[in-house]
Amino acid sequence: MLFRSVIAEEGGGDSILTLSDRGMVEGEVKVPNVVVNGTIIGDVHAMTHIEVASKARIHGNIYYSLIEMAMGAEVNGTLVHKSDKSVVELKQPDEVAGRES
Image (cartoon, rainbow, N blue to C red; front, side):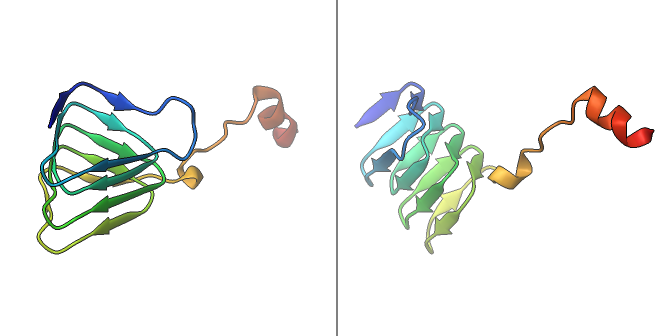
């Protein structure tokens, strides 16, 4: 089965995308939890967990918080670790000014 689209979960929940060894996605994937055993041509954003199984072929970058990769899996792109801790809350100008005085 081939999907040519962006696959995204919009509810902010705990959705899981499972792509079997016969499945193929051409486009960007944005789902909190991803299990891949097929082919993805495009970037993958799995901000909770991604499992890259032995028959997986990913041609794109993977943005992840937690990753599992089996022997035989193939990633042709960059692995970019992201976590909630990587988001830094900006200080308001009055908070910064209060420290300086």
